[in-house]
Length: 329
Image (tube, rainbow, N blue to C red; front, side, top):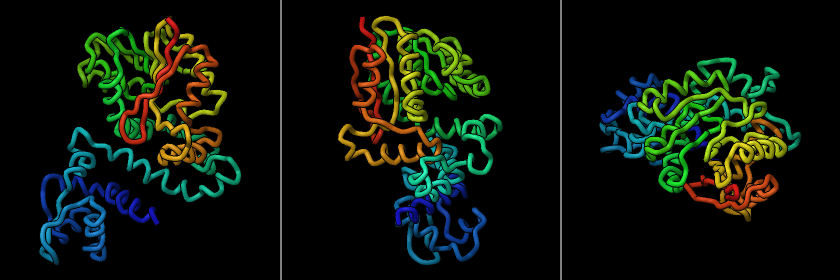
């Protein structure tokens, strides 16, 4: 029954309830009107959010008032710089219904997303609609921001001068690294349709002197040469053959002594503990069919086949890790 609390939260985000509350307290009737709900929703929906830990309530009965918790104020109020509700909006609009066809995906090995209705893959659909592409990229940025900051804080970049983030989306990883390490110059490389979005973000961060956006199709173009090549939530989107192609492309673009860093929800080597990583791999089945998530040991083996000398895994927090491969100096 875990889909029950999931949908309660996703509907609250869809209604923008946490942004409506902001830093205010509202009684049930006022909150019901503010988010345009039927009277039947009050108080069950709001009290369910209280019981699940997503709202605080002062008092009992009709006179009780509701307010955001510290966590929902930080992460689910649009006015917060740490807002990550865009990801949950995308989950609600797309993944929630697609996961209803998990059994079919398990039986057929075929994706269960938009391709069933339109014949187009997820990426074809996204890149054909600029507003949906912008929403998707912002959603990915919201869920990745903490991991990117953790990488900037954890990995020793002092021996490197240049970074290329392949599949850089909005440019968030590049700007995060450049802001933390003033000696770095970064390239955020992605398909041409993404460049205006990345350029706006880079300019808004005031980092245009050290971060540039560059057009790249990483399956047809060589990766830009850099001391460090990064890929955030990229490898898991692809089949084994294409994973190995991207790893080899990174190896070819790096100098001796360079580093290749991927940020993923790496599955633990024993495949017993990182439930989120395993479910993300099932999500890749639903989205793409032959795509999958992987372990640190898998990454090490593939990188060894490409010629990398050694690898290591850096935990970033929660289910996410950075897997790093070093090219022999």
